[in-house]
View 1 (cartoon, rainbow over the protein chains, first blue to last red):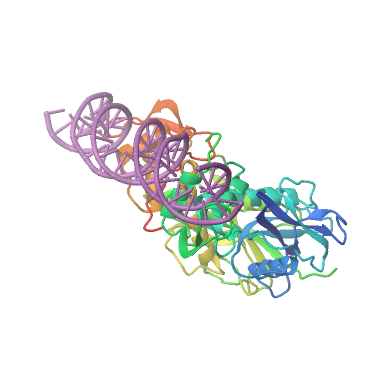
View 2 (spheres, rainbow over the protein chains, first blue to last red):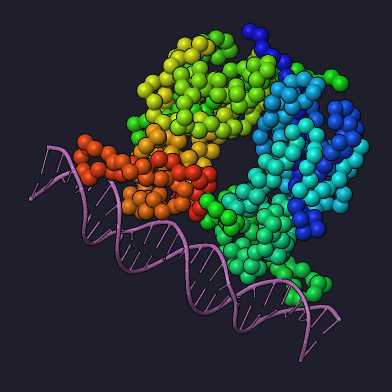
Length: 226
Length: 226
DNA sequence: TAAATAGTGTCTTTTAGACAATATTGT
DNA sequence: ACAATATTGTCTAAAAGACACTATTTA
């Protein structure tokens, strides 16, 4: 049986919350096509490599980190015939949520790597679309899962968790109602016993991510319409 | 730049509600590998074809229908190195939700095609896993979207819609509370003005699918735990 | 008439959302 | 004491869930 030949890549939508806003990791391309244009980090899947393995490898190469505390999941695949001028390339996009890190390490393929606010467009290939899909996935997942904690360091305060929601959803949330919701939803966050110190105001208790995989009931964002 | 060579397929998780239960369309393989084993319908993506186009083409070939009333969305991609003995094959799985149809038309590649209850395992390749992922996606989507109507003919009763939920979730729902929820959630279903006739009991009003893409508030299934 | 299914109303409990009040720190 | 942030409590409105009751058909 004969069939068409493809190349397969993984591309990463790596999101974090920095300076109170949702930001994405972009690299400036160091080779053709789209030389010098901003793009999502990514690369070819190797000959003997699983898709998730390739995604983890690229994440480690581009960010210099693959430690715990973050989250990586498959997002979607994109395979329009003309999406890559080099030929038929299908890309499997992954979504990574990470705590705010010092600074991205430029990988071997990328001339530069930078965090940018997610509003940016004009990316290489069909990466504008992939980025938009990743942002929408992240926004939805915060409603139904405890994944907001993936944007936080291992121990965090309720206020820090709330600021993640505010940054990702782009809307403000009542701190008092959020506190009650976060602390009473089973499996969402667990107290460590510790507290912050040195800041202004009353010290805040520290929490770590709970074991639940689904928030029940969910934490719904306000919708403009159904 | 050199890179590994892949083949790309699409596989379909085609679900419907028949005889009060959730069923999936399976085909008996007519060629190697996994000759005579049950599998999800699917096939290779053609040289100049988009992924979604390939999925729609396979759906039409296998079911003999691509008319309106159903739903087709990308599910996930699977690319473990050993998943296909013929070599490196990445498959992009799609999920289709269809109303109960007369009977599947056997496609050219498949010796037989049959509806089967979704409990079935022992499928070819990694199709057990893909099927499980598709079922879970369908169950989740019924909570947050009006997609249950994709399992119904163009005009349907509230009771028929409720029976879809009961079949997909495998739990019974109070008909009176469901009626209120379905008819008062904006954009869920719209009355056609018609009604059933000929059955026993009071005739039921007919509805068609509403224009909303998201149910707000959602219709949550009962959870055993968070 | 009875049986069957469709649809409405009512009550209770849970949750969201607004927001007052209290608690605990640094200056 | 005052400013700042954390945390708890109170009230109201929306929604879910249990379930009595009414409506409209066929047999």
